[in-house]
Length: 271
Image (cartoon, rainbow, N blue to C red; front, side):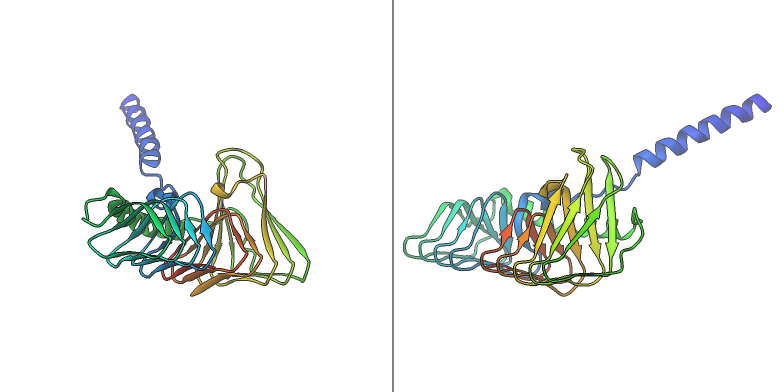
């Protein structure tokens, strides 16, 4: 009886170990990681002379202003795509039957309006994957104490350093305010598998010429999740991360540098 009890206990331990690994919650953007600008419920607009490089641009509608450019595919559903004068889409312009308007001097690498292009499925999956990301993040504990309200003074400097080498770091704060010329440095330990999620329950406010910089991390390893209704990256600012605004709109100011991506519920605007 005792030996059988030990056997059952060993089986129970093995089952628990298997269950915990099999059902462990992972934090990934899934298909959304293929996008550089995505609006889940509204439009994406690139204003005059704006440009984005690698990654899809997608929303209910997509508009490229004069002389702007998208380095990959532009996807719109259920509305259409407008490519302004002298603007270009290096990849395909894709809709589910809606019109694609090409202005003077503008171009798309290819056009697809018949509703069968796999980009449309990827866009739908990306929106679903963002929802899964938010749900999983909400159920995860922070890996260090909450930072509360953070404010970096004019021309000041603040560093946030993760603590888990080679793993997932979740850092929470209620809000972050960067005054003119201020710099926020996000610092990693340097492992290739490291990931930092800065999860803000409130606003991210950045004044002109403020910067977010990285040390020991790359843009693909950093996600900044902002719960506020809108996020504006102002003129001449720097943002080397993936910005997610699940409840709001995103705006990229003129002359700003976005190394990562903008994934937002409402309008994504690059100007």
